[in-house]
Image (cartoon, rainbow, N blue to C red; front, side, top):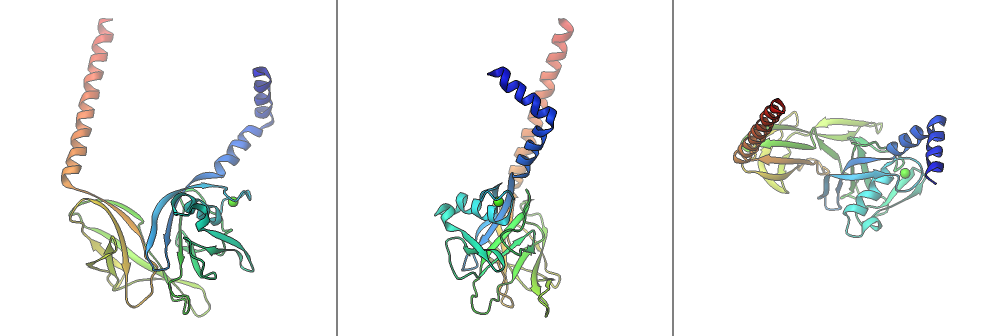
Length: 264
Ligand SMILES: [Ca+2]
């Protein structure tokens, strides 16, 4: 039996089939980051890591696979919280985060609007899907920060820039800075406001995880998301101290090894 398996592997290698099989497997797996905003304009997923695999078994990695996986992993109804079907526009979302509203959903990959759920997706991409809050005037406007994740020290200033994607008279997407937007920390308004270039310099007073978002009265923005991990000075000191101790222990072990090898 072992001989037969060994011969089969040899034959596959000789035929060049094994590398191809491994390559196909790696193309059809990985991880992506997913954000979803609900019908109230609230981020329910913010840059969450989601497994990437060929969930719908069509032989390609697409937006559809990612949304299926995101719901399976994070929605209370699992994969039942999402559905899509073929329409005249390609495969379209028919249910997102448990909400069916007749097809009023938006979807962006790496801040570029999707054409359908069949759009390709690659490991490391950021997919942002949202339910329209305005199903009459469709005023929902996609917005995003220039960073989706940050690690900073408490008290240390950090700058984010907020942009949005609108459309010109010919329905071509147009990106512009969002001025005068109020910054939210975990959904609560702060005193930070974006300038005429969409930029804002933030300072976090205490350590922890903070979800940064933004809103403005002049546009109906989808909530941009940036997950910020704030280190306190004491935490930073502890990490540095721990690292130094590890280095010292490793150096001591190295000296002992050298002495033993000399006496051997
Ligand atoms: Ca697929």
